[in-house]
Image (cartoon, rainbow, N blue to C red; front, side):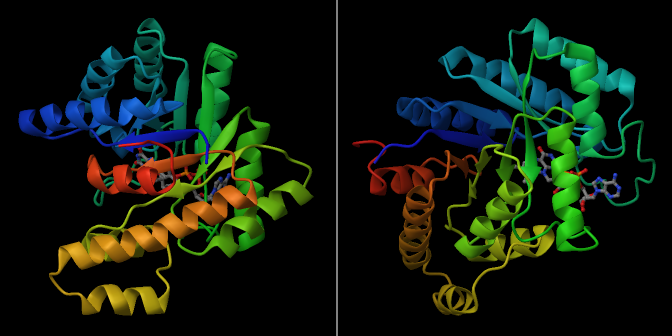
Length: 278
Ligand code: FAD
């Protein structure tokens, strides 16, 4: 089996976390991913850490795609960070709106991801390959499904090249979303975001926050395992592995792994898919 992959990391909070991430990245780099991306806290909350992480990861010969979110930030600060990335030789950006931390009220100069995409194209022309987010199960704040598609397509019209989806466990949701986009006349590559399952309570928390549905039977089975982390990891690998196989058969252009800065869960999935040998 062969399909391009990319890996997502978050900027570590400690020196030990930073050291571990470099090791994880070095190991995953053996797969020759199309790129590795680094998240960015909305309102610039991880600005320095994202910049440092991006710089550290650049040493390993894999393209790095920093995420950049616009909500709660000023045009000036976004201009500065884009200039830094360009000066560092980066050619990719994952452009997002972000979610404001609770208590912060100002939306900033660019309230939606579409505004950020437009801004990047206006300031930097075609220099950056721009990825945007897509939501096969509908973004929690979208008024309805079709409006979500309209807002997604507005980002493509503004100049985004491709999309990465929020993670999902229901392949029909991805297939339906892609079909709706194709029916509107867009051939934009839509890469599924893959969340390896290794920790049940974390998965529940993330899924509630981002609106990803965990199938009832899977939730029941995972919760029945309690603290048995190896049983959770084994079922998670089987389930997410099968999901990836079906996505590849469906023609997904590539797979984007939410690694959570962990090597093993993503590594086991890639082994299972025959994307690496050891
Ligand atoms: P948008 O595309 O702007 O959409 C946000 C909401 O507003 C949607 O409900 C949309 O339907 C609606 N909307 C859009 N345009 C309009 C308009 N003109 N008028 C009215 N409503 C509108 N968050 C981070 O903070 N940092 C990260 O690094 C990060 N990385 C992510 C990576 C991926 C692959 C994904 C899928 C999500 C990521 N997120 C990240 C989370 C993301 O920021 C949130 O899901 C956020 O709520 C929406 O961001 P967006 O870019 O999809 O926003």
